[in-house]
Amino acid sequence: MLTTILLVLVVLWLARSLLSDVSLNPFSTKAKEDDVVIEGKFTPKTLAKYNGTDHPKIFMAVRRRVFDVSQGGSFYGPGGPYANFAGRDASRGLALNSFDLECLTDINEKIDTLHNLSSTEKESLDSWEEHFENKYPIVGSLHEND
Ligand code: HEM
Image 1 (cartoon, rainbow, N blue to C red):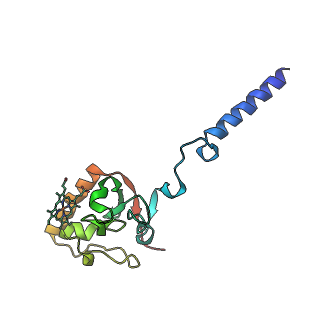
Image 2: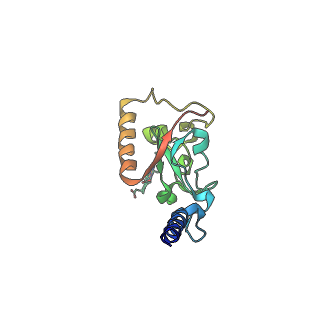
Image 3: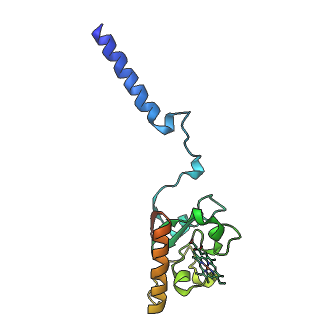
């Protein structure tokens, strides 16, 4: 009798653990697969899709750190004034205070080392970086394409 009760308890406990796993719980509010963001390592190529069009999230890299700027969708979303930065490394544009396409590095190229920035441009980038740190969550880091 005691064994049966113990067995039932173990089965119930196992069922509960399994159901608390969102992937197995049909009633969970698990986000659609496309909304799930794998935090961590991005490359210029993998970052590119987070531009508010190919993916609802908008990410942007500053000095190899990736920020989730989705909340600033009016700035970076499609048609926004800084849409060029969405899904891209915006470091040089922020340093030069320019959203011109020439400030962006092609996603197939090596990451911009920013070695030739002047001290004023570095300072400009510093203050933008601080702005982003205070406003947006960091979701990962930027690494060279494979
Ligand atoms: C025509 C000149 C420009 C005007 C009138 C302008 C206007 C603005 C305004 C009103 C804001 C919102 C400020 C706030 O609410 O905190 C803003 C933010 C911003 N601007 Fe500009 N801007 C100009 C040029 C630029 C340029 C050339 C860049 C290139 C780097 C730039 C990059 C940004 C960024 C990154 C933000 C912050 C958005 C955020 O908080 O996510 N702006 N701008």
